[in-house]
Structure formats: C-alpha cells, structure tokens
Image (cartoon, rainbow, N blue to C red; front, side, top):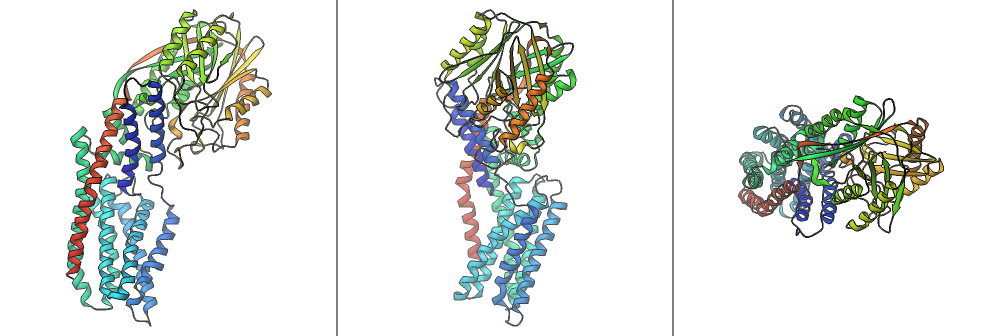
Length: 635
C-alpha cells in the first residue's frame, strides 16, 4: 500500500477520535466514550491492513512471471526473428536475477539495521515496482507499433523514473536507516535493471544507449529530490504544529504493525501522554493461602496489539499468580480508551503497586448469594462479601462495550447508602453485535444497580466456599481472539447456591454466545453464572477484517470453546474450600496515560499532514513528470 494511502487510513481513524473530543460538552460522556471506543477499534481495522504482503515464496513466483513472461517478452519485437525469443527471455531472466540480487544487497547490507525491510518486503516492493513499470512498458509497446520504437523507449524510461520515485517515497517515509542508505536502497534496483533494456535497445542501434545515458544520470536525481521534497513538506507540518516530525510518527507505527516493535511508538505516546492517578480495586479470596483474586484497574487494556496497556490483563494475572499464588483474573472496569497506558513501563508501575499492596489485605467472613436484576436494557449481577459488593453489568444481547465512568460514582454512593464500605465494579463486556453502537442508557444501569444492591445488602451473610481454575486452550490464539490469560473460572458456593464467574482473556463475545454458554453452566449444576472478557486489545490488529480483530466466538468453534469453559468451571467446583474475602483499593500515582487531549493533538497532527500531502502531491510530481517528459522529447 502506498504511503499516502496508509497515512490517509491513519488519519481517518484519528480524525474521527478528534471529532468525538470536539463535540459540545453538554453531550453525555456516555456517547463520547462509545464513539471514542469505535474510533480506536477503527484504528485496529485500518492499521492491520497497511502491510498485507504476499509470502516470500508467492512474491518470488509472481516476480519471476512478471519479469520473464511479461517484461522480458515485451522486448521480442526489437530482436530479429531468428533469435528474438531467446534474447527476450534472456532479458527477462536477467531482470529477475538482477532484482533478486539487488533486493538481497538492500535487505542484508544497505538496510540491515531496518527491522521492516527484510528480504520478503524488499522483494514485495520490487514486485509492486515491476507492475508499475510494466504498465508503462505495455503502453509503449502498443504505441510503438503506430509511432515507432522510440516511444517504447521513452515510456520505458518514464517507468524507470516512476519506480525510482516510488521507492524513494517508501524508503524516505518508512525506513529508519537514515537518508544516505535510503537513497542507496531507492536506486539499487532500478539502476541495474535498466541495463538489460539498454542491451535490447542496442540491438536496434548502438547509438541509443549513448543517447539515453545523460537522461539515466540526471533523472534519478530529479526523482530523489521530488520524493524528498514531498516527504519533507509533510514532515514539516508535524514539527510546526507539535514539534513531532509526521514521518517519524509514521515510521513508528509501521515498525509496530509490521514487525511488532512497541518501543518506537511508545516513546511518542510517552511524550504526548499525561500523568493520572490510577485506582486499582481487587477482591481476594483465601483459605490457608490465596485461592482466587479479581483485580480491576481503572485502566483500559489498549490501545492495540502490544502497545500500552493492551497486554496488562494477562501480565497482571501471571505476575500476581507467580508472586502470591492462587488464580487471578483481570476483568474490565468501568473505563474507556481515555485511560490507555502509554507504555510497558507504565504497565509495570501498576503491576508493582498491586503486588506490593496485596500483603495488606484484611480478610472477613461471610457472603450473600449471587443476585441478578434486569430491566429492558441492562442486567446487574451482585454478590456481597463482608462489607464489599462485587457488581457487574451487561447489556446483552445488545452490544456491551465501554460503560460510562459516572456509573462507578453512582454505584459507590448507592453501596454506602445500603451500609456497605466498598464496591468492586466490572463491565462484563460480553456481547457484540454488528449493529451501530448505541448510547448506553445510564438510567437503566442506575436502576438495576440500585435494585441489585438493595437485594444483596438486605440478605444475611453466610459462610462461603471458593474454588478456582484456569485453562489455556491450545487451539485458540491471538488471531482467533484468545489472549495469553486463557480462561479463568471462580466458583462460589453460598448455602445451597453454587455460582461461577468465568473470565475470558479476549475482546468481547459475539452476541448470543453468552446466553448459549450460560445454559451450558446450568446443565452442569451451576445455579447462577456470568461470563466476562478482559477487553484485551492484544488481539487487535493481528488479523485482517472489518474490525481488525475477532471477538470471542467469531473465529472459534463454539462447542470447543464451551468444552474449555466447562473444564475450567468443573475444575473450580472440584476444589471448593471455605474462604474469607478481602477487598483493597489503592491509587497508583503519576501513571502516564494517553488522554483525550493527547488523542486530539495526535489526530490534529495527522490531519495536518494529510492536508499538506493533498496540497503538494500533485504539484510536486506533476512538475517532476513534466520536466522528465520535456527532457525525453528532445532525445
């Protein structure tokens, strides 16, 4: 995909995010949160298609066909009939060999420090260049039948310039090896590959190669200057507006999406980010030792892939289990993309603080049964442990995406009114339809929360048992929508009621799957159950598709998934033992996040770069083309 198009896709997403932020303040923050979430998921969808290249073997096969069967045979009319076929095939084979050799030199020597341009991608770029060059050659062959072979030669030379310009734009904008090496890589394939053409033209007249030699010396200079001017003018917009070179940001995005490097883009996010105090609540169950822990940070696990806090759910789970034992899970809190962490360093701040604070939990006895309250729009699940309410929300079967942050304040106020000390509040994030996102009905959420808390708080506490287990499905990967945290089940028995909470490390469930899986739990003896996802964005931007990721169940066999969930729940039920519960809330100070204002800055930067690209692309390359045509006209 060309750089301007790639920038355009980045811009579409970030401009949409900016538009959300610029809406009037009086609009409900619920709608803003939903729109921002949609914009960020749009980023995954667009970015994941930026470098969809063929495999090396496939690119090599297509390249050989293009060079030998099309470009090479296009020279057939220039040779005598007796040896024309052999000569044209020789031209094609030599073009193929020279292309491979130049790509090998480029990837292994000139660009060896660039993580993007390995041999597969340099060959793919050369393939696209040959397709572009071939279009000029074909037009030249057709027109030469009417106007003479010189038109064929001139159009072939124009194709040479187009390819040189394209390569220069790609390397100047996407390569991180510096200008001199980018120039060398830009010229390394076109210059050797013009030699077989000179040979074929020399078979017509030995004077032709000498006549075109000055053009071949001067035209690459014009191509490089035009490409550099185009990239520099876009770059200048970023420097002028925010002190960030636009193309430097673009290179960082490419390094992440193409080869998975997170450091370059996270450096920009750290610089653009802002410090926030992050609250983390966790509910721990223990007998003689820790049994299960539900950790809920007010951090959104995004923005995508391995950037920022995308991996936080699985990281926090594994580190907590390693340090304290038992099974841990990290369901989504009442939060949106405005609190994505900026880097892995910020992840470790959260993890370190949670691990250190877990030692100070005070445990109490007694729990209520699991209560569920619904209205036409929302469902709340509530269970009280000691003086702490564990409350979760779903809008299933409608789309359940990020919920309004006001909900946390509402729930905590209501919890205090009914005599509770604290509340751990979770967004189940367990239903996704293909319908457009609708505003979350805050009043409906307030209603079910209030009624669920009233029910639970008015019920006597009883001794309870907890069991927990985690399974890691071998058949499901990030591409299928399953994160590294696997599936965790926490079974809770109070009196005669046994309930199970199942947490899947994924980004939402396809609509209807929640209800199907809940019926499975009922069949194996659980009176109540709920399914959560962590909303991990580690699964985002790893597949092509309309979303850029697969919600749980979209690319998975439902029966196999149900089997794993039953396995986790059965194991959890099988190790039930009397437990106490402890709740702790801590604040991690000065954590770097990607705030709304910074998204605004970033989106504006890309917007300005796109506008500048649109303004300069035609004048720069039109002037280049005009100068080249004028030069060729006098040959």
